[in-house]
Length: 239
Image (cartoon, rainbow, N blue to C red):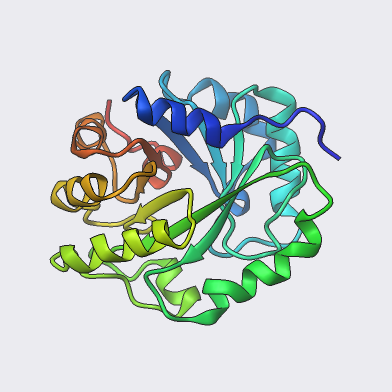
């Protein structure tokens, strides 16, 4: 059982109130080489504040192995970003308790959450209820395929805002706008701005962000925490 977990939500909330921008790098356990963990950590952008861990599909046990390795080498908060209930490790600091509120598949609205309860109720994991909204990033992403749900079109801004507010009103502590892994088109600044203006809770944005310029534009539009994954993973992120 973990005894030194961090209070990640309080930190995110405080940063949002102070307009201090946060950056998370996403680790896909199935693509992560633990023997190169130290190199990975040394190459993180200087402004990195969190490490997210998860993927749409991950082999049984891989998440726990990666979390333990990173925990031994880094003091950065480790936040689980699971694709399903099997990707839960008691060695992490926090868990984004995701509901895919942009879709209508009960499997990812509540079923996976129910299945996860046995794994999390006796741990010290900080549970952060999070409304997860999939936005069309210009290509069929893995989340779309696995969840059997469709992303919200980027031009349906009112629907996206209403979906985010529905998440807030139903008790979510965070809203996560996701264009999908390797998205060709990131979530638009117009969407981010509209959602941020409507919400009273912190906003996370990820998918398709490949450069420092895009990162800064995402912050300026209103994102409190930005997630980069594929671009950093394949070395294509441009400073």
